[in-house]
Each structure stands twice: as C-alpha cells, then as structure tokens.
Image (cartoon, rainbow, N blue to C red):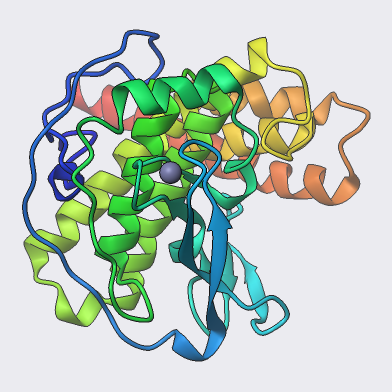
Amino acid sequence: MSLFSGLREFGFDEDLDMDLYDEDLLKPRKKAKKKSSKRDTDYLLKKNIDCPCCGIDFEALVVRSGKITLKGHDEDLRPIYEELDPLKYDVLVCPICGYASMAKTFDTSTVTQRQKIINYITPWYTGASFEGYSYSYDTAILRYKMALLCDIISDSKSSQRAYTCLKLAWLMRGKLEYEYDYLDLSQRKHLEADELAFLKRAYDGFDIAYDTEKFPVCGMDEVTIMYLLAILAYRLQDYDNAVRFIYLILGNSNASQKVKDKILELKDKTKKKVKELQEQEESAV
Ligand SMILES: [Zn+2]
C-alpha cells in the first residue's frame, strides 16, 4: 500500500515517493472521488476554527465534550468509547489552504512550518468537500493522511509523525471492527495489513523520538513511550526490541506497579512466542 493512498481526493499524487522520517520534500498534484457516512451526529457539533496558515476561518466537526463515555483501552493505548469513535474527528483540515493537523497540534506550528504549507501544499491543494454531519472511516483515514503529508512537508517532529501513523493504524482497526460485516475477506485482509504497516511506521518514529526528543512526547512521559514501544514491537513480532523495552521499564523507578504488572504479562507472552519460534526453527532443521 502506498503511504498516501487515497489522497488523490485532495489533489495529490498517491504515489508520492516520500520517506516518512527523512527531510526531503516532494511535489504533489491531481484529484478524484469522495464519500460520507451517517450516525455519530448526536455527539458532534460544528465549530469555527481559525486557520493559522491562511488566516481564514472554517467550520469543522468536533465531538461534544462530556457527551461520550470511555469504555477502556486496547493494549496499545487506543481509547474505546461507548457511543462513537472520536478518533475520526481528531484531524482538522482547512478547506482553503489544505493545512491539516490533529486538533491538539493545529495551532502549534511555527512560522517556518506554516510557510512550508503555503509553499508546498496550498498550490496543489484542490480541496475536498466533507459535506454531511459525520465522517465515515474512509473519510477520516483520508483526513489523517492529509495531516501526515503536512507533518512531513512541515518537518514536524518524528513523534508527531509517529502519532499520526499510530492513530491511522487505530482507524484501520476501528473500520475493521465497526464495518466487519460489510467487508469481504480481501478488504479485511487489506485493512489488517494496512494497520500493521502503520503500526510499524509508528514504532519507527517513536523509536527515533525516544532517542532524540525530550519528554513528554505527544503528551506521553518516558515510561508510557517505552510501554508503547514494547507493545508495538511485540505486535510487529520484533521480539528482540520488545524484550529491550520490557527490561527498560522493569528497571525504571518511575514506572508504576500497574505498568510493571502489565509489562510482566507482556514478558510472559513474548517468552512464549520466542520459544515457539525456536521450536519451529528446530523442527525445520
Ligand atoms: Zn488555511
């Protein structure tokens, strides 16, 4: 899958050849289809947002705070809510200049970063209308990809790119869960593969951030990032790195007992997987 598949909707070439954690810029173009969904509407409202890049305000759908109930988290910290999946509404996209970012970081870009959006995104941006009162997963995924493109173009931190990738992976998982009955086998397999591909990109970016950025990173402290890296490495079957982060957490005095208990469970699971692999290798000889 191309990193930016689907972004034709916004006027960009889907085959953009960009390395996620490299600093090179590339040039986009073009246009195509669109989609929308239903429901969610009882928990959403339209809000006026000022775009920090072009200075024009636009309307965006946001989740009404206090209206939804957190049910729990997946192992990799993905939040699950009772009423809807609010992740779908986390990215703001300016319909005028094409600047896109998660709501939390929308206003935090520097003057240089905004200039890069105006220079490298706006001239090619054809706009995309998100009519209706809610977003489908497909629309949400496109909005996140637009945010990822802006992350790269504006040289955002590795952690910010990684977080966008992590949330993209969560959206793929959300789509698979919520739309499972409507998807055929091949679509499900593609979604699973896409989820893993974005988890890998998230892992790589958080791994770079772990070594190069100051904590907190994307609102997460060092222990939380180590926990996430351990979980992601396990999910990606990178057991050496899973073990590396497991021991870092176990030896960290800031890690709570609750985190250590969770990580001990992961340690057992990792041990089992490594043993299984060794046995498979032995029986193959
Ligand atoms: Zn704008």
